Length: 234
Image (tube, rainbow, N blue to C red; front, side, top):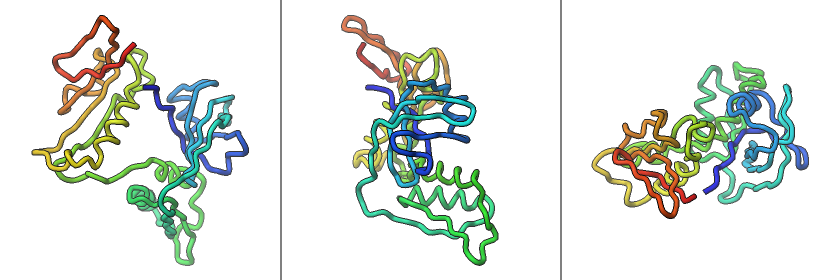
């Protein structure tokens, strides 16, 4: 299974033709945190729900230039748009986050006659876009069901990992979410993934089911006694 490219929020105004310009906090995350380089694959999502796939062409101090290779338009149910008067303080962040959790396809911040906030500023607008694009859900947040599916915070960039476990964690989460066999456990059940056995970043030994990445060949198969082994053929 191939590694899923990292995804970034971008304004549709910064996408022109087959080029996108990523700046601000998302540029910092791409360049300084993930340390991506020209040629690396990335994913973008804009406020219209479009998913854009491409590769980094250039990175400088102001922006990253991304060549768009594929555009996937949003599809499915009719859009649910929430038009919301801007709330002062952090409560607007919470409103945008909860709207995304409940399935709103768009959130329109409105400056109304009695709004205290007259200009939210570019930083707040960018933060709201990131919150809306996060794809968070509250489904199965209560009850004795499968809870958090987590992975090592350094997955995909750790130099000691056998391979990136991120796509496996995402696939398991998608499979278990809403599964009829996972709705009435005796207690809550948690999973964790780690790309290597020598570091404790993934905390796999503290979860109900911990999975550690290993390589196996046709003749050699390794297993761990303390955790389930996530196996990938070479």
